[in-house]
Amino acid sequence: MTKLKLLALIFLVSCNWNEKADKTNEIASDIISKLEDYKNKFGTYPDSLKLLIPDYFPKIPSTFYSGRNNEFLYAKHIFTRDSSRVEFFELWFNAPFGVEAKYNSFKKEWQYDD
Image 1 (cartoon, rainbow, N blue to C red):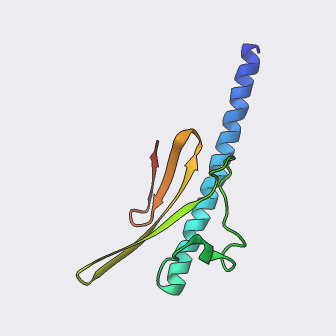
Image 2 (cartoon, rainbow, N blue to C red):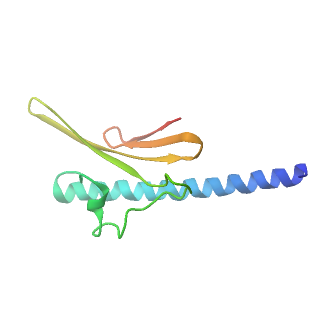
């Protein structure tokens, strides 16, 4: 393979990567929004993403990354101390190259771990 063909291939792969990352981030933002809508309606986050079906999604969306681990994962957390109650969730997915992208609704931020 010539250097020019190799560079062209790298460029095409990186464009595809950016497109998949952008689409996955859009879907994740939509899931986060729907989780907040659910909490506003019911006073608590759902115990499972499956509870968003069918009112918020016809099925649980997947990431745009191919492979076996292309699903969004979710965990609801509740902490009580004295009379205080804190509830939040984490939404995450496995991105390529072993990177885990995780959103924490308490901190309202994404973390990326490899």
